[in-house]
Length: 141
Ligand code: THU
Image (cartoon, rainbow, N blue to C red; front, side):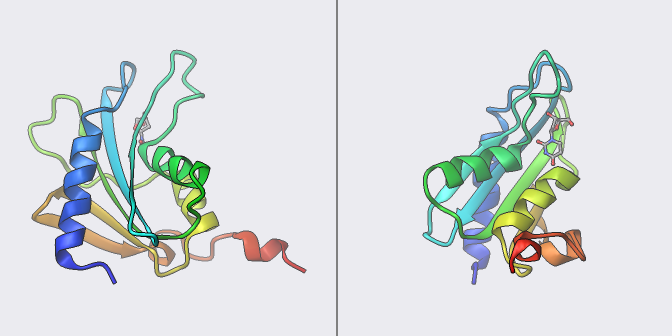
């Protein structure tokens, strides 16, 4: 269970991570903070590329950092995003590709926090954002 305090801390971290986003093309900055079941928070931001397709979303940056460090189980992720010059942020939902990456490593009760700031947080379960998703169990005997 993620406490309300932990949830706010994750959002705070995501807001900090957003400031590191490398977005010279879209100018849309996204930050993520992914809580592993080991209690460690993995940071992520989006990283764009002049060739466009190699760009990586904030959520996947966080997941790939965690997995590459040997962590495969997760509790929750906080996501914040908006244009560079936005005066205030709106909720920024994860793209379909990132939802699919979550589906690979997370159970249906994995929590996704979309936030404008620490006091405006919407909480979803992965199954709500990706119902009837295709996952690793479909490839088991
Ligand atoms: N972006 C993310 O980082 N996460 C999402 O789930 C939505 C989109 C990034 C990708 C790109 O760098 C910019 O936002 C505009 O699409």
